[in-house]
Each structure stands twice: as C-alpha cells, then as structure tokens.
Length: 174
Image (cartoon, rainbow, N blue to C red):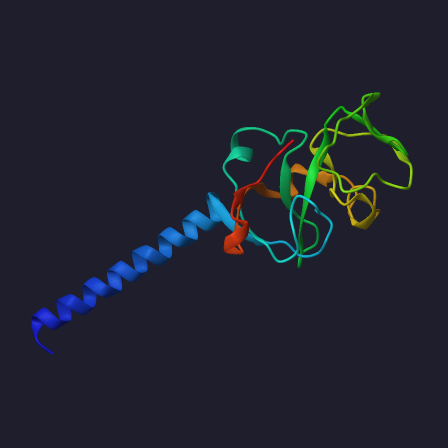
C-alpha cells in the first residue's frame, strides 16, 4: 500500500474514533433514546413509541411537577412516569383525584382516575412521587416495588417522540 493509501486509511480510522467518542459523550451526558413499553402513560405516550430523553435539565435543577421523566426502576429496567409531587409536598389520592398539599390538582392528561385511595404521604428531600397517566394500569410510586423515586435514579426528561414517524411530536408536560 502506498503512503497516500495509508494516510487515507488512518484518516478514516481517526474519523470513526472521533464519531464513536462523540456519540458516547452525547449519550452519557446530553440525550438518550428510550422505548415506551406498555400502556401506563396512555393517552400521552403509546406502547412502542421512541423518545428522546434530555439529561441536561437535571444537572441544573430538580424535576418539576407535571414533567415526564425516565428513571431506573431496577438494574434491568427503566420506567417513564409523570412527576406528581416533589420534596416537601404531601400527596393523597381519593376517588375524585389527586391532592397535593390539600389541593385537588388539574390533570387533563389522565386516561382515568385512580380507583384505589392512597396516602397521605409526605415526599422527603431527594425524592419525587411519580404516577402513570393511565392510573389504573401503572406501576408507580403507589406500588411498593417502585415507591418514591430518588433523584439519583432519574435519567432525564422526555422531550420528543420521534418514532413512529407519523407520531413525531414534542412531549407535552403539564
């Protein structure tokens, strides 16, 4: 192989290495792709939709009520749910809806209200209370295996549905 051929191969190798390193940095610190699995976020998000999840916001601030977040539920599985309450808030669920700090919150995104009462529970520092929009088909903070979500478990905020193509949209938060 001549010198110009070796230089060209070396340039290709460097370009591929730079692209791989950039992709890893972007995935580790900026954005990640997430696959919705199940019906727990209906009608907001649908099974098999793919999302872009931004990691940037939570480097600078804590999540806000109404935001849709992805978090590590187990070592093998991530969940996507809506933040209902943050540290210091009291949550209570009754047949007529969800109360945060004694106030019935407006939830136009909910498929149906929760059938089972819950709480009251006060959210401790470093945690959030999350629920799926499909309240009666969601394993969320009401469920003992999920419980309150530590801020350390958060992976990011859902920002964009990009697949399937006919469903491309910005994710609506409260």
